[in-house]
Amino acid sequence: MVGRTVPGECSPEAGPASGDMRAHLNPTRMREISVLADQLASRLDTLCPSCGVPGYGPVDRESGLPCGMCGGATSSTSATIHGCARCPHRSRHPREDGRRSADPAFCDFCNP
Ligand SMILES: [Zn+2]
Ligand SMILES: [Zn+2]
Image (cartoon, rainbow, N blue to C red; front, side):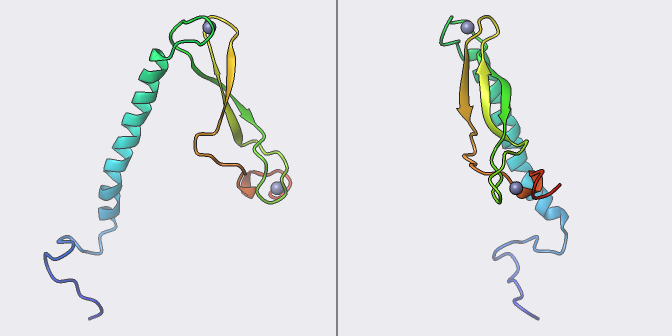
């Protein structure tokens, strides 16, 4: 009745099945997994800028991302700390997603 899709025009499987959505998400998920694997591999390839030992990568995280509503520090990650397994060298890396403020849901003040 309303906006009937021409069979075979856009989506041959245009049905009410919500399972279709999941099927469409799967490739994305698989891509994310392979990205994680890449990150793991690249970490092993990353040499410590100080002593040159491979395996330099994330060892800690810094919390205290400011709340988007009140600006107070939350327990959300604000930066990742990369470190060396051999020497005390550490470096601080801002969040990769570029987020500057936290969801107020994670704020102890706004959302206790
Ligand atoms: Zn807040
Ligand atoms: Zn080192």
